[in-house]
Length: 364
Image (cartoon, rainbow, N blue to C red; front, side, top):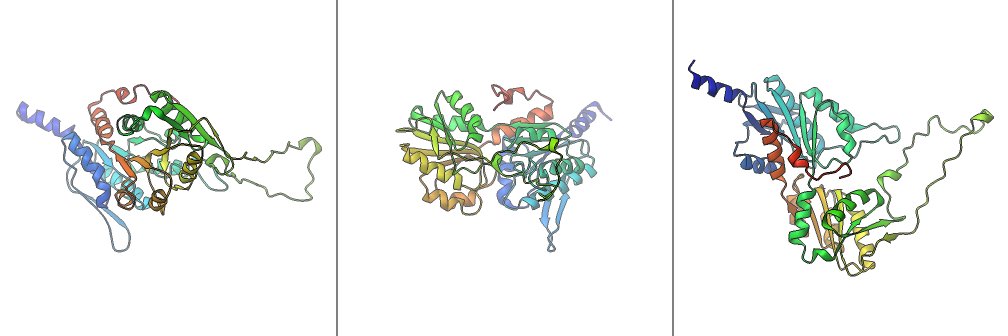
């Protein structure tokens, strides 16, 4: 074999392929944007649901010895998308791909990362399933809890969308210097503080009884059940945990005559955002923006936003939401394909990822 042919063979062997594991057209949009930026073609594969509802995946080209990136955006039908990803990863593993990297901008089940009642930590189960299916690395964005990275037995790159959202605030919100960053509950205060410090703006936090936060949900492990006449050893009487009682709604920080920018990681059920917008309006905010990385916007969200005091909802394209945009012109999209394509390029070339995490602290 001539040296030139050997070089070509080596280049082919150590090349990379980008596949989309989605069977719906709306979900392949982000994959197309990423491949355009990389100057690559989307890998040839067929993903479809059979008449009996089973998912079938067929890889239509050789991936032996290659780095393969599977871009999987999560639509409304979460469980189908998860199965598509698992089956494609396993198909690539069987086809002898060298590395299988999942590009999952919105990681599903990330809200089920804590123990509740007699449930389970579903996020940990999904992490184990992905490892078993053959994934060797994951690129994701703004995990709901950063500790989720610890569920995986392989590397996870948790990229941030905040630089793109900060850029949007500076370029698209007129007079943003008169804005105040708002956390709709104390849980979101850390994220809001990060935005406020970077933009040199003030911070406000909404606190009070109307907010039923995730942290306050009863974890429900009353096990064993309370028995009336149980004899308890006098030395074992535990102090009673006092029930929480929330104060009336208060806004900590001044929003009067200001633009209010509510920041969060996920906007799904919008009731809490709508309620927060009403409170801010009452307190004198004259314009209200909501910014979040993942715009899931399920059920009646577009209609509720359209009828609310919210002026604009800004989300990234980690989750397809074209249908919701048609229903509600207040929803605006920021494209984050740039950072995902750069992450793919760096991982394939074995370059440092530090550039993508510059100025990001532990709390961000």
